[in-house]
Amino acid sequence: MSVHSDSVLIVGAGQSGLAAAYATVTLVSRAPIRFLSQRPLGRDVHFWFRVTGFDRLPLRRADRPPTGPVLDPGRYREALRSGRLVRHPMFARLDGEKAEWADGRREGVDVVLLATGYRLNLDYLAPMGALSGDGRPRQAGGLSTTHRGLGYLGLEWQRTPASNSLRGVGADARYLLRKLAPAGNPAASTKL
Image 1: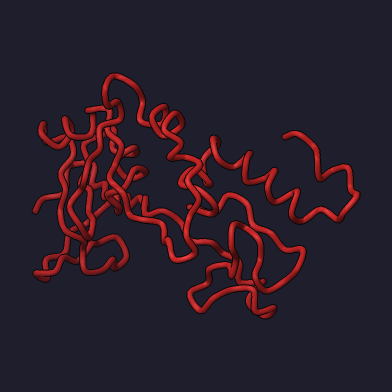
Image 2 (image 1 turned 180 degrees about the horizontal axis):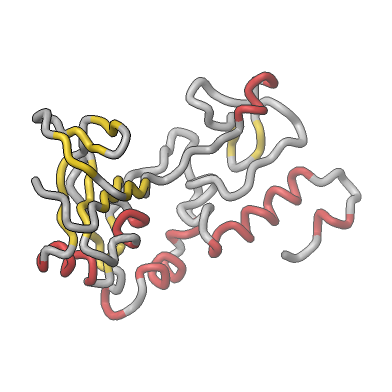
């Protein structure tokens, strides 16, 4: 495999990884890319999520955020077809300015862009017992299951599939405010 002249590796085949692929780059990922049309039936997929109620579906406690397909308006698949974006399996490791591949080859890279999504960094809550072993908040619908008065907002799939989006976070904030505000507090009925 030859890294393009820019020597740019984007790590991650999700929405953020492909969104960053505007130059000629090599995209590395553990799994092949799966696509979903951004505009089924001529309307943006978020329109359909809203009008069908998908954005407001309640989640079961066992639901975990899925690794979903990449919403593609067409340009990402075109970038793959044209060769501006080349996808390869994940490198074995990074060592200084070189990527080492599974077959032992090492290649210099100038830029490594991690577009892998991000995990919560709530280590300061660990001593309280508010986190599970993998660092996730112990919560249901954004309400802590370990500490009264502790809430979380903007978690992926917190209450609905839209919880970590601009469409969903407002409804989740109103819900948390109603649940967390002391009884009789006028803030509990504030419109957001």
